[in-house]
Image 1 (cartoon, one colour):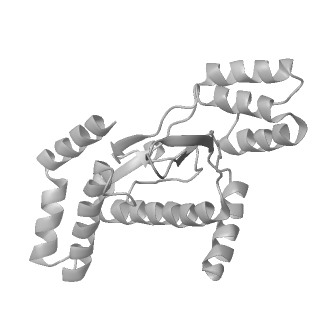
Image 2: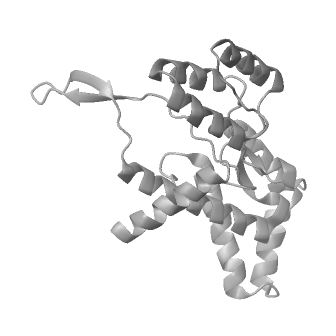
Image 3: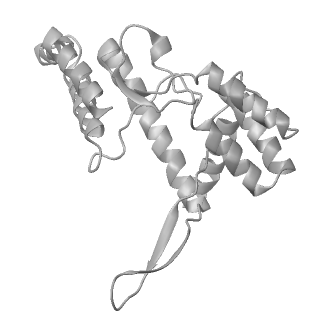
Length: 223
């Protein structure tokens, strides 16, 4: 575990260095009364290094599975993409930051994160919360989509990576089930060999017009 932790810390540092955005919002945690089972106390949830360890390997798994699906199925890979933020909203944020005597870079996720780091060093926790909260408006929510032919639509802005998917939570997220099925199909193609009848049948089924339409419909419904 300690070895995995050391690797995770290096991966996290490199990810942040490459421009990955960390927008930490406050989450509540409750302590329950053992006799009644009712909430007795509320507090802010503390994110520990153990959380970060798990997060790094989840991100890595999701990234590598997305890569596998793209390599096998191309435009029928099922991805979790994140578009660029709204420019007008980011300009408004720059204006507010300027009025507080702060500088907010908005040209990329890296400049945003670098600015947040500087604001955190120079300002009160309340100002940091306000700026972070304002960032959630111009930055859109990530969305599920079939990859399509344009690699520009695969990108994940907040993670600063070229593609990503949701693979790690199939018991609580249906898109992950779709991804598991596609990954299984990809493994079967490799197992039988790309020139085998089995592999050709799988590829035809996944790339069929009906399957393509179904993936698009599924992505829209999940969003």
